[in-house]
Image (cartoon, rainbow, N blue to C red; front, top):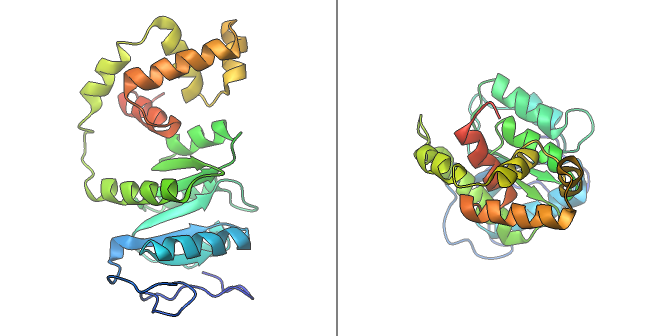
Length: 233
């Protein structure tokens, strides 16, 4: 973790009342799984996310780049990592690869731009726990972090929903399956529409049907289910 002039980093222990990392009285001391590492080259984003997560009772570590994080990484990384996908040097995708290559299984949430669908899907295939499109609501990020940490604490060798996911996949029409394949390949709606010879509006309708039949609450959830059903997707 690199100290940056003008930005106060959250301390390793729980921020105390009155510190910039904890604007209100904390109800409890954070446990190990509450640690969130924010990796982003934008100082304003780091500062904003650090403030947000501290108010949500997370202990926050701020890192200016993936390289800075990897240079000071502990043998075991607790909690969760939130990283931007587009960064100079080591980007979010390569960061994921290097973490996995070093044997780290810490859940990683990737922040992407609204048009970075292909990168978001690639991140999921590289093992990201979730991806969030900017701009996002504060509660969306907080819930994603809590879900990622909880799922990592209850991981099992065989996903318990594999059979249910495959059953839902069998309910898709041929056209819906084609749209799903396009989404999992990271293609935007317009490209899927062009490839299938249909209108973007029709793709949106099929996409909504796929989400409903699969019980997916978000694109990241849908991609995750497709990967569970077929890891070679």
